[in-house]
Image (cartoon, rainbow, N blue to C red; front, top):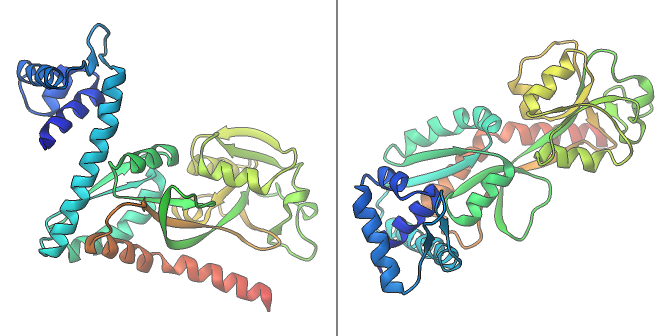
Length: 312
């Protein structure tokens, strides 16, 4: 099997241009064009429609790319297994993580990992929940660190830590009628219809959490593009927002801003290391996940302490 052939065709499909693909592959454009033409001749089908710009995959090309990704993924998993068997540790680990979560988690994880595995190359790919999940499915990422409300059958999940989801509001926004009786720091989701909320844009994982918590008609005054933006707007007195403990710890905001647990039991989600179900989890990946668990354990402990105090 000529894996180079698969990689070349995939690169052209990704770039939408033989010229761009040749530049990224450090090849001359005529050489790559000739190579792709030779592959098409051997297969007896056209993989690319060159009459449009950017060039597009034909129906046969779409099938080729789908199978090429699968074969390269299998080859990569085999290589990982053989490296573990032979104890060759010079490897690459590709981690997908959102930009905000990367700022928060990676400084706690990567220095420890680098000290233990100085020869392992770490590639960090930022992106949205949807984009990273798609890349993980395609096999272009090894591990994705994602907050997870509902675990699906698509991936394997390993819990890294538990994180509380809270309502943050500017001074005077949340009043006693919005709270549980006798609970000054616990909001009642069924009594919050009058609160002006800053909500995240559709598709954001915190938006999914918001829609699960607040099922009635809500007073949405602004749609933010990031949790950090939503929190700072809330702190400025514009309203309230739903944010994770991570965002509250990471972003500086006005001390007049108040944080409320969501009752009757604090709402949490699991931040997980997500992998394809057929992925080989080698010693390097296991170590990375363990370091992440150790580095973030205080958040899980904080949740347990809060739950214990409520049950007393």
